[in-house]
Image (tube, rainbow, N blue to C red; front, side):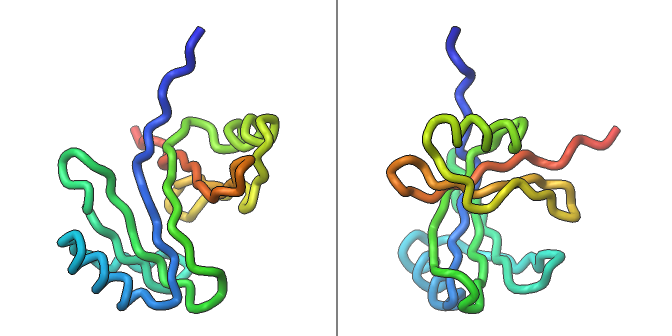
Length: 127
């Protein structure tokens, strides 16, 4: 039995120089960004870079509190179960599953080759 395909639906660029990153990606790819301050403060600049056929993403200001990074996120139905399966397959959980105040659940992983990736489940649908 084959598994359903898990879509990559988001990317995030973490940087201690968000203005430079926004300028670079804007000039290189024509991306525009809109500030959407997260609940924990800081700067989170969202882009619909993918248009109708690609994926969206954001630039997150790290304020030098973590290394700069670029990571893609795969949308899953159960983040905790995905983390368990990833570990069984040789991955390492970098950031354990956590849920944001808005209800989005996410985690960060290192694949067996050392590549950083994220998984997330959107907030539950409200009736």
